[in-house]
Image (cartoon, rainbow, N blue to C red; front, side, top):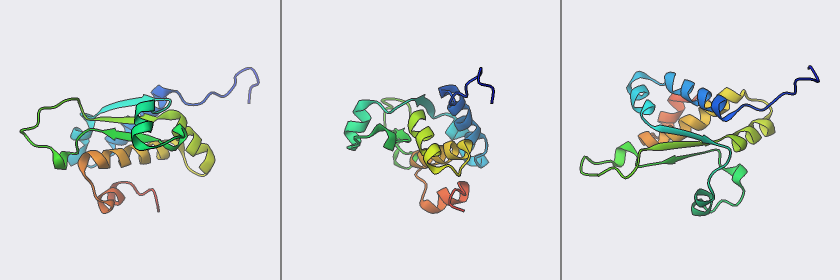
Length: 135
């Protein structure tokens, strides 16, 4: 390691790139719809999210789906806001460091698939077919 060039943690943009790469690996029926979900990457969850979820430690929330699952939407619904997936970089990095045995891109993909599962209304079996995380 060059002492003149410190190692920096992955940026917000790097985490977003990893998350978007996950969408490209989804089975065809889901890829296009997943690409329409707004993706936001922030260092931490906004205080309002933490408060609403009853979470005190912002490092406990790695991602959040904010929207109405496709399985619950109706053509009669008027959209209030776009469906959005939030990823929280610092919490993801903390989990990655704590685990020490998983690739960062794999962890980001796991969080992204979990949040997409909320959007699509996937069952645990559906998730397992796409995210082989626990193998």
